[in-house]
Picture (cartoon, one colour):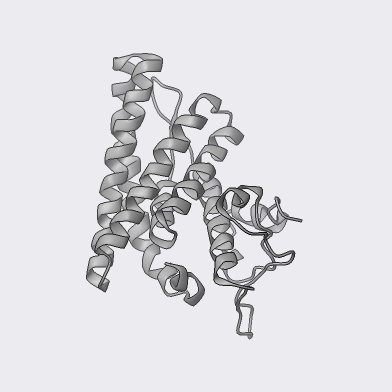
Length: 231
């Protein structure tokens, strides 16, 4: 059963049914997680969330598997949030979206290496499904690096509550710089300097939006015990 995500999860996210966080039945680990493990995934991994009138939680065989599931969840979140709202950018055929906020969060709740994979695969999958084929490898590298940098910053300076928020903010600044500069350099080679320059303001706005989304969602997610344990 490994290699697929629950249809209920995907449909709920695609429809922006955020009650998925309140009532969630099962998450089947995606195939991408095979690249992030060194041992066999247990045959049955259940993610049981809070239900009405019941106390829920995550039941796992070990912490390693829990990290795999959370990495898979973040990859799915990155993909679906990226595809939820897409605003085309002039000159390059690209688009801006709110997914950068979840990309930053990948770095905060996963190790830098896993954050790179989850954010890179989730973001590039959104490009692939959306028909932006030429951007798939570019997005994988840039968004993966954003999550990696955010993760390194969080590990280095996230010692207290105040410093954790500072790390989130610096991760957002890193997102603005890496996204604007990375896409500018790549699009300059593809479309020329003038067209690439026209997309820079939109990428800066996208990065700033990601910073704000990350700052808002971070305290909500860090309050979830099972996510906090792997952060």
